[in-house]
Length: 83
Image 1 (cartoon, rainbow, N blue to C red):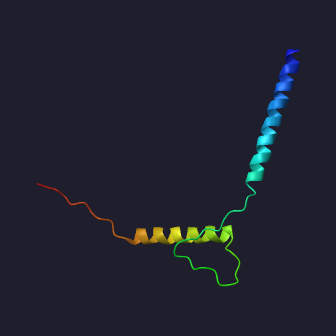
Image 2 (cartoon, helix red, strand yellow):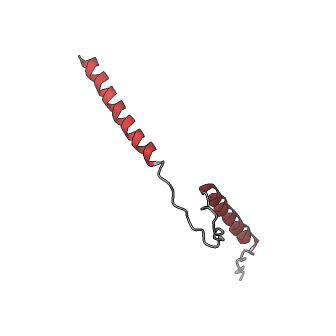
C-alpha cells in the first residue's frame, strides 16, 4: 500500500513537471521584437528587419570597438608623495 502511494505520488510529480516544461517550451517560441541599436544604420527601404543573429553580431562588434578604444587610452599614473 505504501509503495503504491509512493508510485502514485511520483507519477503525479512527473505529470506536473511535464506540464510546466510544456508551458515553458511554448513560451520560448514567442517572437522577439527587433531591437534598435544606437548608432546602427537603419535598414534600407524594402529590406526585412534585422535578424537576432545580425543584431547580436552588431552588438558584439560595438563592444569590441569600445573595449579597443578604452585600451588605447593612457592610464593616469599616481603621483609619488615622497617627503
